[in-house]
Structure formats: structure tokens, C-alpha cells
Image 1 (spheres, rainbow, N blue to C red):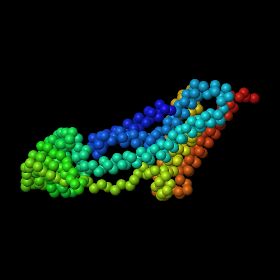
Image 2 (cartoon, rainbow, N blue to C red; image 1 turned 180 degrees about the vertical axis):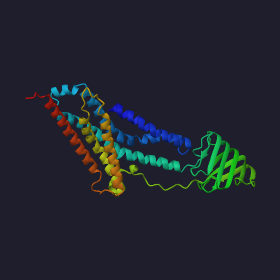
Image 3 (tube, helix red, strand yellow; image 1 turned 135 degrees about the vertical axis):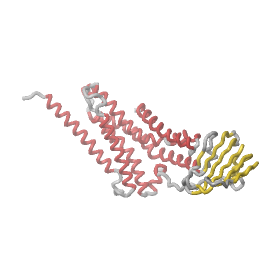
Image 4 (cartoon, rainbow, N blue to C red; image 1 turned 180 degrees about the horizontal axis):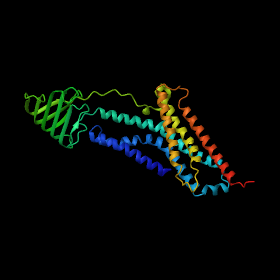
Length: 355
């Protein structure tokens, strides 16, 4: 199970990390917090990866034992199906405890830290995230900044800034300001305002398509750094602590609490589901039922996610929660065991001598 967990974890985190690298390349995230974000979001990955890895481990291990007739040997030595189920549920209990730790405590705490990191990033200007030799766009797209080199003290060399005013489209610009300077640095006054101080350069002001541009040469030029208006963002439900979900029972919070509990309860159910699905014979191959089993497990998780969304929107009663999805899954598990017993009875019937 550990090997499967590590493989799925590396694939999932690698995919997410590539997205953060793209944001860092665009200048919307600083590179020094990328690994910190991934560390805080590790519990969120493990919340789903642990149950799925547990299911895959049972399917692969028991499937190999059935294909190699090892289960037949165990049954002949007194290993009953009930004992096999009890052993599997013992492992499921350990996975449940780990999943509960990640889902109920560690994931919300990690997501809260990630929200704080993202909030700090939104408060930064493009000069805080400026990298030498790369054009940096303001999020609104109305200001482009470039510095050929940045010294350790923060002094910029070969500075270029272009700022436009007008509509959001580049074809309706009412004013364009282009500033070039040999060097520049940012300073903070006593009131907390940040200023960009440029030295030895030119400032060109005008409207694109017109000839009335004004050019000013300067030895020192100061400009107030206007920060973008930070948009009000509602706190993500995944970042809300479990105790707060219970203290503030809104539909949004109730649906999230049901989801966290359901992920924990899903562990024994998918474990019970995997036992009959792993039964194969040598002619079928150990992986013959892996794809149908994975599809069934996937539909179970997707069903829980869809039920959470429906509960949040008020489309299902709060009393029903996500329990009805577990009820359907229990019926499927019972059906799998019934079909398994029916198959064994038919096999014995075919092997019995005819009168």
C-alpha cells in the first residue's frame, strides 16, 4: 500500500506543482513559497489518496493470491471468508484513523495556511515579484515592468515601465506613459506608502497613434506605487476548521462536514467492496477485475462529491446529508457478496456428478 500511495501522491503533487510553476513564471507567485504551499497541501492530497490506495492494495494483493491459487491453500488450512473480512477491516481501521487525522484536522489547518500565503501574495506589487530580465505584468494588464538586473540590496538596473490608461482593451488607450531609467529602487515613507525612485532616465507621455508625445529627461524621478484593489474573497470551505463547521451550521459548512466524515467512512466500505471484486481465477488474470473495480470506486467518490454540492445548494434535505450515497454503496457491497456466493454455488453445482 505504501508504494501505491507514494506513486499516486507523486503524480498528483507533480501535476499541481506544475500549475504553481506556471504562476511563478507569470509573476503571480514568488518562487520562495512554492514548496511551502505543497507542504501545507500534502494532507489534502492524502485525504483521498489513502482510501484509493487502500482499495488498490486489496485488489492487487488479493487478486494475485487468487490467481496463484494461494487463497485456495489458505482456505484449506481453515481461513474462512469471515476471517478474511475481519483481517481486512483491521487494516481498514488503521487507514480510517489516518484519513480522519488528515481530513478533520491537518487538511483544514494546511489550507488555512495556504490562504494566508495567497493573501500575502495578493498584497505584493509587481516590484516585489520582479525577476531580472523578465517583463512583469500587473494583474490588470495596464502596467508592464522590466529590470535588466536586480542587485542584492534591491537596486534595479536598466528599468523600463509602461503604463496605460483607458478601457480594458488595448485598442482604446487614452494615455500611455513610458519610463526608462538607468537605476531605480523602492522606498517606504513614514506613512507606509511605497514610492519608486528612478534615476537618470526619460519619461514619455502621450496617446498611441498621435504625434503630441511629451518627453522629459530627469536625474531623479519619484512615483507612488499604486497597489491593485484586492478583491474580497470568501474563505474556502476546506480551510475552515472542523470545530467551526459544527459551531456555524450553514448549508455550506454542513456539506463540508458531511464530506469529511464520509471520506473516513468510505474506507471500510471500499475495503469490503474490494474483497469480492478481487476474486479471479488463473485463466482470467490477476488484473481482470481491476478496471471495473476502479470504476466502481471512482463512481462512489464522485457520488459523494456530487451529493456534497447538492446539499450545499439545498437540493437535498440536510437530514439526508451524504448518507444516501453510503446506503447505495452498502447495497452494492451486499449485492457483490451475494453474486459471489451465487457464483460459487453454481460452480459446485456444475462440478457435482449428475444422477
